[in-house]
Length: 327
Image (cartoon, rainbow, N blue to C red; front, side, top):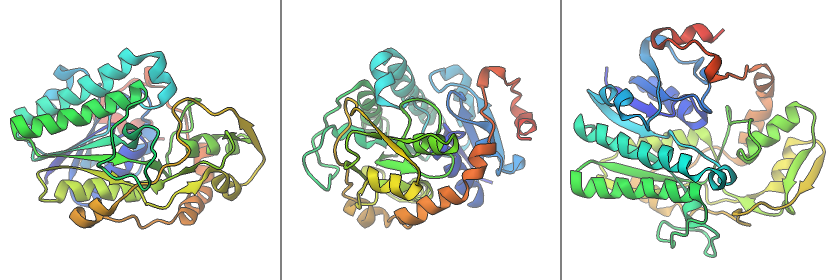
């Protein structure tokens, strides 16, 4: 059985990628520091095909040996959100830049076939050209975008100098089951669901007329898998739908009362991915329409209500018995 690594594999997107890889017949090693990842995100994974390591990718000595005999690495471990990155930029550099460097170091040492990186469309900044292609000027407005883009530049450099096959996927707005519902600056869908679960009004930032390119998480997981299996040595691709949807439309579909709050720094009025490149070279395209994605989330909202909130520092974590906490 071939082995792969998913850093940040207990998180929102990472857990879906891990599930897909298990279905494809891989042994999955999940490396996660559980800052935002949750054990209950992994409840559907068979323990015989999964190994969970509680470690931070910024600590090379704790992760390095796990890369031995690994075919592919899916690197998603990172700190997210714009506002917290402004408040603690050094933490973001440590996690998103040094962490990525460590992943590349270990991949080089053990001759990993390919590293697929979760980059961010935030690298485009306040965009003026739509749909936005991979050739758009990079304008990293805030530390989060900067550190994610530096991580991407590391992949470019290491592919050229050290001959490591890498693909960087610039993710637009990902939504779906298990999206994070904690934190004041989390992704919009997660925030809305937390508010809906607690019978609170949905907070609409600004007018609500701003649009986002929402991509369902299983489509994103498929993009990662397709990128890994492709024969492309190195490249960068947008991952989106190319069909933006307004925040007001999402709020209406979710239902409930709404309240407006001031617009936050660094938030564009529109995002729209140009996905011609990924369609052409990887043969990937999104399958889940926005209305269907919202329905899936609403149909499963009771699972959010029942899901425990895991606090990492209160878990007596044992790598080989991680599943004992999934009760």
